[in-house]
Length: 445
Image (cartoon, rainbow, N blue to C red):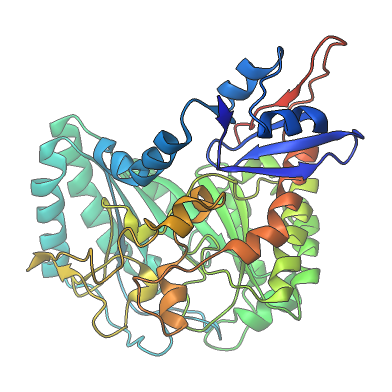
């Protein structure tokens, strides 16, 4: 057996003479003596601990086979799913005036027509629900709750169709939070509402400067008040968009939330996201559009530490790929056009079809599988990025066939994230006197 190539080694912070092994593919952690690691690297297997490392995905039978399995990993995942996920843009209108909004340059107050909504329902029922697929819709905008009649009409029909075909329908909201009060949530729950993403950009004075109403008035109190009203009804993800000059103030938001009754058990995750470009999709993003700017390499682990230290959940370290690689994820804008990522809306030539025309072949135009080259397949970080973010590649003026390499970012931040997991998330396990290995499997976070 040999060590996996998708493995990082860090010094153990509290056990002299030991190292931490972290599997980027399995999200598992183990501590072993440094001399044991040296033996493994020489191909010498110790008498104790090999089975534990094998179960954690750190020792493998065939490195070449592992490499080929990685090449096929996303294709296998796409082949297994029977769950279609659509982000549906109901309008390009909003009651807030966020200075970094990526839709600012093409927002026109346009709303999805009833005819387009009818066609959307028809396509989802015919092509997915009637074929045995579960469907989850994420309603997006603009501000989707400015189109509540459409949400109700679309969801009622899809829910009835799903029930009649023995599959599941549910929907989420990506909302600025100003309109999702308890009464609205209670009305939408029977139609399939299961979760919402709110955005609160830090403590009140920062949030109100970054996310004011169109009138200029602050929105913090309304949004946090609504969040407190609904966080016990649906799963809530809390997003917060920070800048280099203010990210150190964002932990104060986490200190304020319990005063409103928004304790860690009330939120599914807190996702701090950098505002890196007005062309990005901050509200919907989970932080994929990272860059190699030095301040971000300090800000990302700083804010993750602040989140975990206060008991809130932070984004996980796990294998993940750009959304364009996932076949059964699609963005449908308010005119019925298809996109593979919300950030591509408004960009010339980035549509991949429409409700009228169907889905076009986007494999070449969107660089599908651009990471299937030796440099990526041999990189220990491949499971964490799979070629990075296509939108970042586009912002940098590159073809989408070029990878957005994350090596510099992970070199600077991954060790800190692993240590955070051990400190705040991993179960504590004491080794017996006879054990060669101290093992900590990835927690279910």
